[in-house]
Image (tube, rainbow, N blue to C red; front, side, top):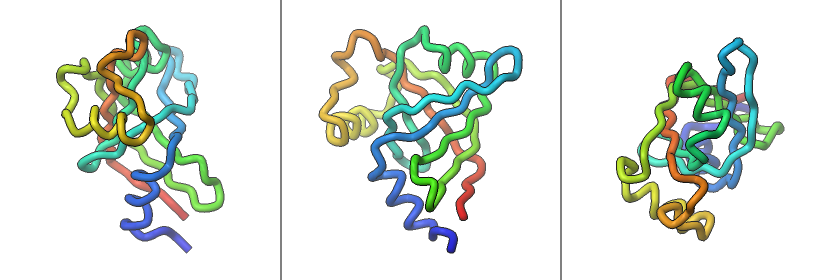
Length: 124
């Protein structure tokens, strides 16, 4: 039975990892697991500015996300944009600290945030 909207939102708040698929310049998918925060209807990821995922998103903003649970899948399709840390909502920074005990403001490697705006939610 499909999850309710509230159940999906709960999973997005509580799950630790999400799979991100971005599109390489040649059209091939690039799939990676990553920590994330769900806030105000969007998904936030913190990563290195020179990562493959960031390079891909800068050329093609279309992405897909999937939680790890294959028994009750949650898949999001949407568009992504790369934000500098100082343009990231303070609540998102605080949520990374709470969820992962990680202050992204002091990290020297993962210095950009990817904001994903879902346009489609799938589950079954």
